[in-house]
Each structure stands twice: as C-alpha cells, then as structure tokens.
Length: 397
Image (cartoon, rainbow, N blue to C red; front, side, top):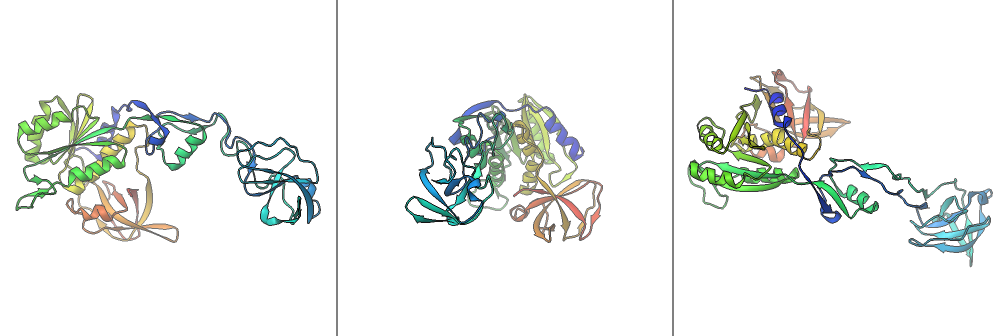
C-alpha cells in the first residue's frame, strides 16, 4: 500500500497544462490566466483628484484662513488647459485631472464660499494631499497579473483598466463522472431495501465546478460489463475520468477488466489514508482515470486530496489547499499508520484558531462534510493527540 505522498507524486508527475484559448473579458470570471499580463500604461493614466474640492498650490496657504479666486471648474472626463497662478483655485471633482500649477486638493468641507468667484480655505494642507498620481497603482511595463492567476472581480477590474477586451485563459478540464453499482438509483426514484440513491454524481459534479472544471456526468452503470463499457466510452474524450464505487475488492476486478479492455494502465491501487484507502489511479492513453470509493465522504476527500491538485496543475495553479495551524478542542486517537483526514469546525479567538471534530468521522457520514470548515491532517506516525495540541488544517470552505 502506497504512502499518501508517494501516491500524490505519481498523480502529478506526468501532468501537462491544458491548452489555452482567447475569451472575451465579460466571460472570464473564475477562469485561469494562461499569460502574464503587463500594463501598457500607467494606472491612473494621469494625476487626478481623490475627492471633490479645490485644486490649489500649497504656497498660497502660508496663512489661513485664505481667500482665493475661483477661476474655473475641472470635471471628470474633461481636460484642462489653464495653468493656475498664485492666488487662484479651481473647483475640482473626484477623478478629474489635476491642473498645472496645483499640488494638492482641499476637500470641499474645509472651505466656504464667501462671494461669487471667491473661496475661503479654512485649514492648511500638505503638498500632494488628496492627489492620486499617475502610476500610483500600476506602472507601465509592470507585470500586474501572472500566469496561473484565477480571475475574480478585482482581477476583472484591473484587466478592464488596462484596456483588455479579451484574455488568454486555460481551457477548462472536462471531468467525466461515472457511478457504478446495481444498488444505485436516481435521486427521484422510490427508495427500496438494498438500494441507495446516487449521491456521488452530484457531490463530485459540485466539486468539479468549484475547482474550475466542466463535469460530464455519464450516469449510473450497473454491474454489467457491456453497459459499463458503453458509458466509459462516452467519457474517453474527457481530460479526467472519475469512476465512483468501483474500487472495492469484488467490484474492482470487474471494473478493472472493463478499463483494461480500453487500454487502461494502472499506476496504483490503495493508499495509506483514511478515508479513501481503496482509491485507484491510472491512465487510458493520456487521460488520468481515478477509481474513487463509493462511500460519499471517502469519495469527496479522495477528490480533494488527489483530483483537485491534478486539476490545479492542469491550469498552472498552486496544487496545495490553503492551510492554517489550529489548536485541538477534541482528543484524537489513531490506531493505524495511515494518514487521517478529519473533518473539523473552526473558531477564531484571541488571535488563535481552534478545531473541533464535526462529530462521527465514518466514511458514510455525509453530514461531516456539510458542517466542516476544514480538514485536519493527522500524519502517519502520530498515534494520539490531546486537547490543545496543534494540527494542520486544510481550508475547504
């Protein structure tokens, strides 16, 4: 039985990035950049006002209050050709360009109009105050977004500010999902003794979408080789194939036989982890194929620890989930040498994280995945942890 680290290395070692495609800016939310994005101009493009007020030269404010002549108004989107002289001010709107001869903006609340065309400045102000300088945010030639960046609202705004109409992004990996077993029925069917509703198609589909893939559900295949092969063939053009429920002792031989007839080359079966021990992995041609446990929690944990890292590497992203260190509120006893992945709730107090088990940790306790904020990793050589001990927690929310 492979150690977890060895198995993950095998999964990731032959991975090549997805092809890229051009996508218009309005459609790239949550896509992943396949290029470094370099600024073609300064942002802001010109010096501009950070608020409504009056553009002035601070040399005029050696003594305050000070009355200045208002010689114009600078509006957003308008250029200004006039150069201010000492004793003059210009009314200015937020975002409007700073006129020549000005070095700061006095907020409107620090002024009062005393007559037509005259403003009284009530307080002194430092040079550069309330001015947003050209290039203050981004300098021309700066790499602003790196290849492998997931595009969220902030990144979309930055791309728009740089004038990008379209962006080079990685294609989304298509992930085929096949569920096996004569006992599995569709969610809408009446439950009968010995039958189980299909959970994993929907849980795995949600995980695929969450991590940037396109799910391709192949449906439920019973324990019939012809039907199983027919459904498998529908997923052969995918980037990854997931087969749920085909890794138990008896059924694995049956599924393996069907896979082998399609050219499957197995890399491993069984990993020293809990839950998820019977996971298998191999290739049909260049397509990675995972055999995931049928128990819902085992299936989802196996996805998070193996399939998700592979999906991240396909689009040049970091493969590790974000981690924190937390103090245990629940004692843990481990009786084997496997790596355990325990579902925990987190709370944050006095600048520290604390982790509590969600409850029973059985591989069929689906509620443990609903209630968890993260997954506590208990190393292979750790036998027991007491309340107050530190654990590493992967964040999955």
